[in-house]
Picture 1: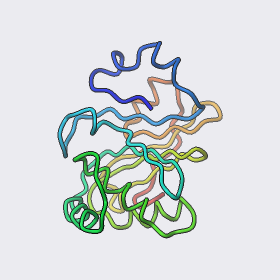
Picture 2: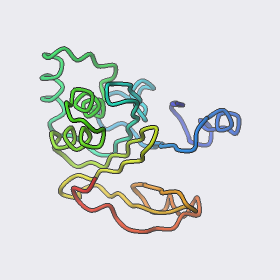
Picture 3: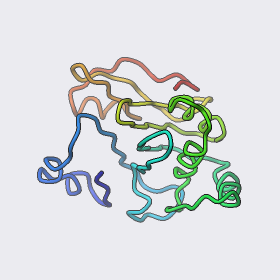
Picture 4: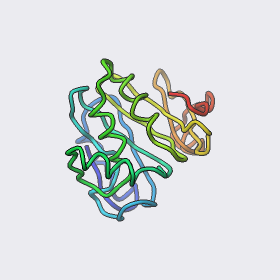
Length: 171
């Protein structure tokens, strides 16, 4: 996991990129619209829970995040950030669903707003788009790998091929 504030080219130097392990990654480039602009709120946010390890990147706004956060805190949740994104992870961690994918669907169904999510587990890349399709989310391919991004110009930069939009409400 590597998180920092600043320009992508400054944050992800060759040395940093060479030090990252694995064959899958998610990243996030955006300004803060909820919570403070601090490195603790930088994404992805990574947790380990009963469903296993998961990282989350979020683009958009969750209009009921404050209400959900208050309920979760009252039930004993301890938040590490003041980002609305962390609410989704707490809902996920508390889910009693058997499979991680079911826990994602259960947690996302509780949030309201305009959002796109990209989640990464050790075995899966999961894309989620809000039920109204307010926030964009595109699916592409780079060789035999999938690429998900909020703007297709990101695919152009890395030589990926656009396949389709993630449909509103699709996981």
